[in-house]
Length: 252
Ligand code: IPE
Ligand code: IPE
Ligand code: MG
Image 1: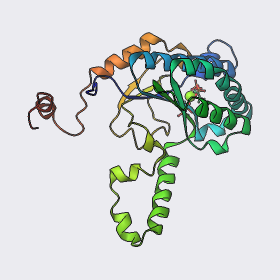
Image 2 (image 1 turned 45 degrees about the vertical axis):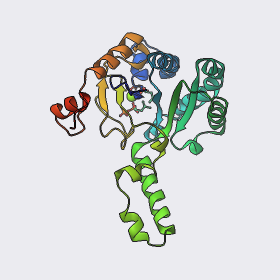
Image 3 (image 1 turned 135 degrees about the vertical axis):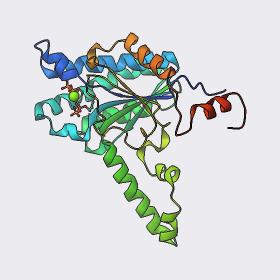
């Protein structure tokens, strides 16, 4: 089947604004995270219904450990209690859960919940839900560089092995290796920054910023992001005429 270029295969979301959503209502920040978790569940369904193949949700960054202990603890315990409850619905909807980030640093109960969700949904094929937990884009690139160096050290000619690595081959050493490259990155909450999300793989993705706080992000907003994406021309360094010629089946 021909690839539908107007629909992103892989959507990544920086789910930002839970704290401000709560604050604006005089509620504790954790209530914002609770509402945010419910929204995460919804966006997976919207994405699956639209035919998106992978959705990566930035749930906890490597930098988020610096937040007040009570918030970090609350987030980890939400993960441990809410994720297992979602498994039956995810089975029904064909959602395969995957994790991205250094999961081994999470509390044991949270790790167990993630392992269980990944194992039990492993055969589902409709959409991948990639939970980015203790994830940092710089950490991913650094870990990839170390893996590459270790691999090269085991080769007969280490210098030649390193020399053979190009951009595509380097990606094999990264955590994102098994994912499609990110086509569309959505950030809610009004900030216009990446905050250490997918650094390598966002090199050519389309960026979409929404002023809405994450708990207020609705299906219409998601569909507006997809419609915006559909109207973009992804030139990857080429010029428009080359793309049009390729679409017409001519040699570009
Ligand atoms: C994003 O919302 C969720 C996590 C980082 C876990 P925030 O908690 O960053 O919400 P704001 O930015 O403070 O409003
Ligand atoms: C990014 O949001 C991380 C997640 C959504 C998990 P932050 O709220 O942590 O980002 P900064 O600190 O505003 O850059
Ligand atoms: Mg934030």
